[in-house]
Image (tube, rainbow, N blue to C red):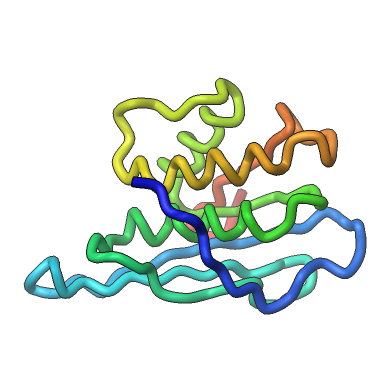
Length: 147
């Protein structure tokens, strides 16, 4: 069940420069999974400002959903700028690259509802800039800080 992304962004780009973003997610694991609490954030490395942050809505709270929702927020932030998104979730980066290259979501993925939101956000970006395949290039950033 896909829902609309309701996001509050703290600022928008003020010029046409490419935007470099860092995303991250976190989840407090409770003894009872129904009490888990997940959140995510997006930071602009271009302007050194917080793009957006917040908790996930819904009953399903996990680190995987938090990391993916951060990617959705980053992709939804602007449709008129080249974006370079750095994520420490290598599996999300690989699936996002697959969606950009092939235009469809692999059937084996978990959190299909969020992948649908990402696919929709990528679709809104087509035609604005000459990004590879009209979408957002994702780069994996290891936790050690090297590319």
